Length: 278
Length: 268
Image (cartoon, rainbow over all chains, first blue to last red; front, side, top):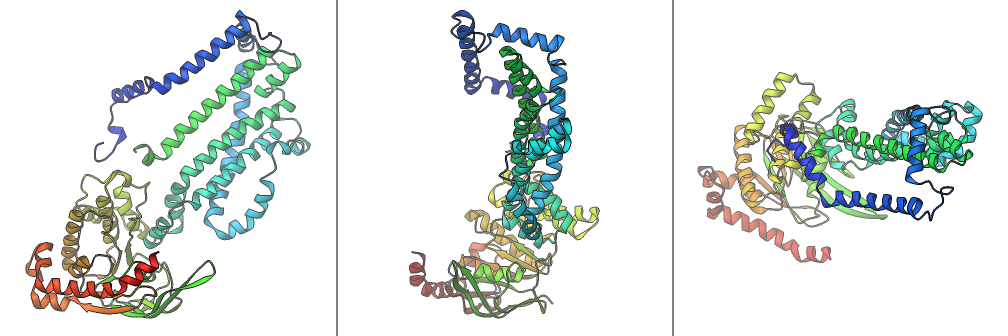
């Protein structure tokens, strides 16, 4: 590594080369191999030997047809793109609200004994309530519309955001806090340049858990009553006894959630440049 | 005037409901612009003394004052060089050195100039944008020292600053510290395990007893240094070869040795 350790100094060609090296790693191929084996087994069991009947689990062909149907002509009142966008919108709203409230609250609890004393008892009381148990109350308050779902998602994402931001502050090395005090760092600068960056690794751990919780509760919320969204697709497909469409819906949830997790990972690396130069 | 005065300082700390007496009625001074090294067996409360002067800990009874005022909180007038370097991992070398000056609200042009001077003094040129984890222990410690020096503090509190360095780097850093304190003498309280280092650097060496820590004796090195003209020699090893140096070192070693047997029993 050059003494300045600057990743910007690396040429685009070099970076591309490294990505190819990554692809040729044995572990990457092991993952691909698993997919190939699973797909082959799926094809053999459902199509060639027909051990599994299509009433239980669809064949690859049926799944592709269901995908074509929802993608091109639509299913459960909308096309796939519209369902995905609807779900993503709810997740992003709930996740953003949880982050905006949960992270500052967690940081404040970690930084101040008195905030901790006021908030922690209430927090400990509501924390064990499963997010899904809030669904009835959310429906009573806000009806079956999107607002109720955003509320539930917000709640599910809120708890990990608070807990991890809180322990992020608590895991900052005490001597770093002493060094800041010795340097006479004023309060605002301390929060911005010591507290937050020090807690950032844990904050992101919390956000990753939050995002996961968002998707879990979104699907559950949409199963109960919705006019659009991936959970709604799954619900409609179960009413129609349409296994292929159920599989398409599940795959859509998996892929969309994975894309959002990867995007969060990119944000994480951007936010902590001092870690990626290791 | 920025002397450090320990007056009848006692420090008790509690662990598992039991009281431990760490410091037992300690009184000593670091005079204005004097370099005092504190040596003693591990666990004797050396670091506690330094932390009390820094305002990071407080005496159970007695007073610690700097410049005649009791120490109430940490501040940039008493810069600490921590044993664990305590650099901010998310700040690069430049930003780490800059942090204290920014906190003071110094204008950017002045900061840049002062930082450049420290970077040069500490041999950190070319490493300004490196993060601490990319540097060796010796380089990290240079950054930590630069971060303290750049504040131009009245009092420097150094807690085994060279403890984590290899022998060669250590000697270089000691010589640099001597040079720096000739150019710009400050009040320094310096903690070390190494008797050589204490005698080489300090005007006076305060020898502590094992826990509960007391001051066993204060050895006046400056008197010998002046009488024997140690400053004729440029290099550490030449000074350390002087009979007067060896004599002082042996004397301090003996004092520390007296503590040893019980110290060993304490460790088990």
